[in-house]
Amino acid sequence: MAKVKLEFDDSTFTLFRARHTLLQSARPRYYHGRDIAKVLRKKQKGRCPLCGESFGRRPVQVDHKRTVKSFASDLSLSLDEAVRRCTARSNFRLVHAKCNQARNRRKRASQ
Image 1: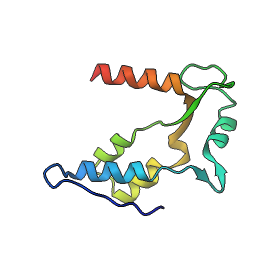
Image 2: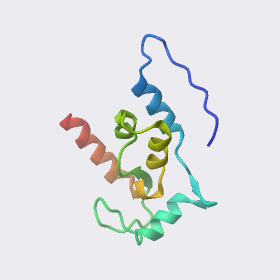
Image 3: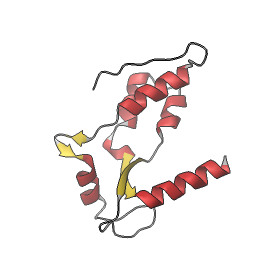
């Protein structure tokens, strides 16, 4: 795991914020020397799980099935366990960038 320099304003420092920052910095790009996007594309048979269409040449993003935010706020997990589960290959999926952005907009609107 890469070393991360953390800086926080003491007035806004919270346990959640610290965990969230650490979990965000632990995003793997490679698994066993293989690009995670290529691994996921093959595993998903070239289809976006959000819309069911083929990826084709459209831009894609690696998405967390269970969000970083949910792992950061789950204090029943140790930080090590939260990092392990958050960065597990089974927690990632490849999605169309537009599908992911639309889903995120809907989530924010419903909160």
